[in-house]
Image (cartoon, rainbow, N blue to C red; front, side, top):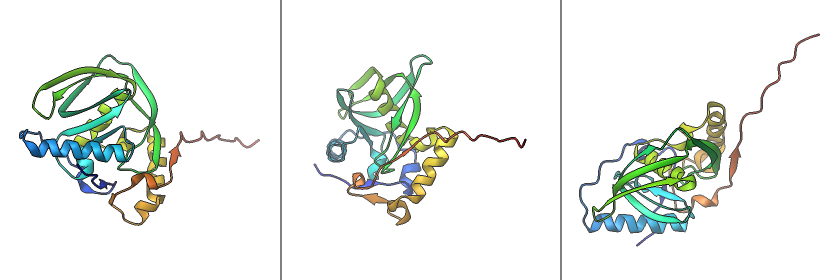
Length: 193
């Protein structure tokens, strides 16, 4: 097992839809082990294969008391309830914002040996499933933010040390300072008297 550099915002692989996994040989097992090692090293709640430059539909997670991996994940929302809470991403270091996701999801896929998986998750695990599957579809959490928050988050990305330096991969994304992007302040229109 080894820790692999994390691809950062700006790397084209993060905007690419990953391919279905069809080979369940030892390479897949090594990939998953490396992903766990990398996620754990950076204290992540999850990590998608595209975040380490591999265009395969697999992610690992460790949050909400659950630890695992899902190959070829497909999820669906259970009901219309949503949850809004803080979200960040190892591929967008230091940027955190409030993001709305489905509150409860059911996910299906297979494990590294091709054995079917199917379970329902809520809270942080549901958030991780949605976030990581988005990665596999080439979607970043910034795209899920409300318009005003997204604008502030993009400004924070452009002003970040790593983006300004043109860094597209990092061995230590946690080394960058954290910026919490809040709702934009409402603007008061003053009427002349």
